[in-house]
Image (cartoon, rainbow, N blue to C red; front, side):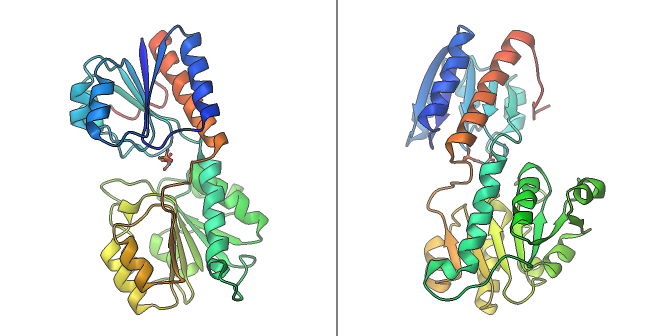
Length: 306
Ligand code: 3PG
């Protein structure tokens, strides 16, 4: 049984060591493909893999076609928009994610980006504080809940909108549920995005929605770039000189946005939300254990394809 870890953005070494331990303890072989630069390298590496662990790496129909022996692919992380689920099903491959394993890391970065933005990107001028400000959490899943927990420590007033999460779960956390995205954006000084990239959400953060935000509004994106309608965001930021956007997922128009919106736009050069030793260990080892559990016991918990 060959387990391939294919990570364009590698895990911390300590996490790889942990994955190796789980895989070798089960009597399987671990193969590493890190920092690859061409798709062909992935196509070659998957050819004889029985199981695959990935991060944001693209597993499309071509990769699945090349992976003749593959039985299972586990996305070590939350979002699985990088896996072609229909193609996985067509190739008889089980696809899983590891929900919750890296969510604290992403939540900490969301708060870090907020602090940086309200302190004017640390440029030496007087900024503002998060305390007493209204925070809107857009989607109340694993990351959203961690953002609420941390933001409480900052003394923020916390609101959330999530069409799939019952009000009671938010209320139990001391979070005020709102019932539309428009209401959330109109209410909050800061909005933190935690929606997945799906057919329904892609491009959904658009001019009309952002226009609800109050003066001095701040949007923090540690989710996916695809959920943003980039052209409309740029148009909105040109019209609303008070509005700030900080993101962990570099927009296609990063250079242009840096030029146009200096001081109120920031993107990390590479997605860093889940890039902590702890998150790498948690998600990587969970992925390895899920593979062993599937192969040995047929356990399909966390399967995301039908
Ligand atoms: C996730 O969906 O788990 C996060 O976006 C982390 O992605 P990464 O593994 O590419 O850092």
